[in-house]
Length: 44
Image (cartoon, rainbow, N blue to C red; front, side):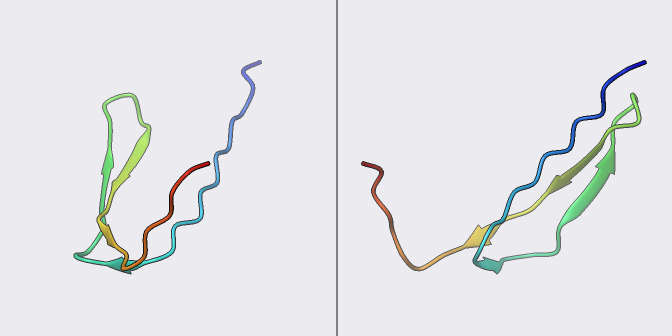
């Protein structure tokens, strides 16, 4: 029995165009999107 993996990501900003949802030949779903933000953060 294969383990199920669920990833969750929260992205805050403004979409610059409609997201594109595609399915790979393997059946995996992939969503492509662009997000605009007007603030910068520096790691560290």
